[in-house]
Image 1 (cartoon, rainbow, N blue to C red):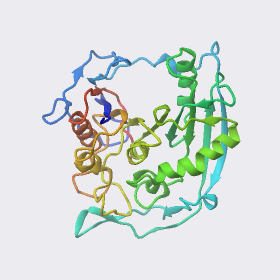
Image 2 (image 1 turned 120 degrees about the horizontal axis):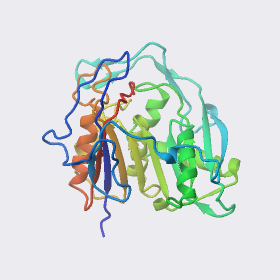
Image 3 (image 1 turned 90 degrees about the vertical axis):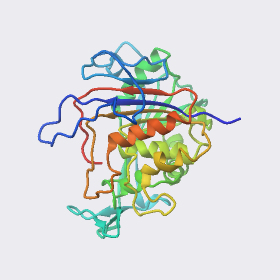
Image 4 (image 1 turned 60 degrees about the vertical axis):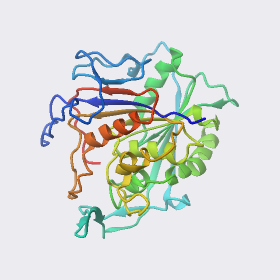
Length: 343
């Protein structure tokens, strides 16, 4: 029996641009070709128990779950570091400061990077273990990119206390530094393969179990990935290429754009391939995905003019192709002043 992909997309309809930053164009969520979405009154959020596509406005109260509450059990956060010389998979690269790549004159979809070279790094791993966790039992968990993520840990305190999620562990993994093509972060997050999932599985999770005295589940339905920007595309890559490991994905402003380096002829357009070829041409996968993007999110943040660097269009295309592959689809579109920096 074929499995089903479920998708939730939140489109953040940005109200204002961040100070000292050019104002990106506002993309109308009702544009032809975008998925159909229900527009909610300003200040109202999408229901947490409903699948569907939603547009939400710029006014929102802080979610109470994100605040510290002293009257509920609070988890413990453990931290440790991982060094590049100890990694079999990621020994470390970096791009020289103040440098970037140049577009390939023969192919605008490729970026030529000549200033990337081997370089060491040290990453921080932060692990949230809830008070309710029983030692020796297998725990569900979520893996997050660009950690440590204290907001996630605080939110889990609330959600676990309210029994809205199980007593789950959160593993927040710092990146290996840098950004985009030629950097360690770009190599980890933008590469279209299951390599980052393998790194987490074979190098990070064993350390988590040892350092924090926890036992992690092997059930892919009880494992989740999450991330923002390139960390969001990495979260989907982990599940897409390793459905044996992960079935649940949360992405914030995922960079489903052409940012992979070095180029790979099997996926020449990087994460743009998700909505261009991979999802439309693949069998359904047992993945449940929640997505968010702001309508003033990034547009062509570098020198490449390949028409594959619009964050909003990429997420809308993702929602559209997923809608063709699902039985139930959930989309939520929202208004905010957030205009993320270059990825």
